[in-house]
Image (tube, rainbow, N blue to C red; front, side, top):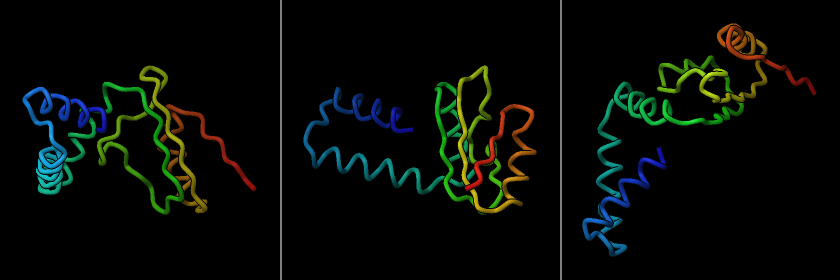
Length: 112
């Protein structure tokens, strides 16, 4: 997402948008556009950016099962080289995430 935003800023700079005030106005419009999108549109935008990239996603201290497809995150796999790290203090959440991810990933519980 940030890389996409950086490219958009560079394109705008090429069009002559050079002052800090002009960049701030432009960024405000981008944020307003994002805020007007519904969750499905945002998930689609996130998916379109991440599907072309290798990424590591860290979800810290989650308390409910996270549906990656629902939020636009491609499922990590060996083929796409992406990684998912999550922490939780809930054994129930751990069990649900492990079942969801077991067929693609190795899940390693860390018990302290």
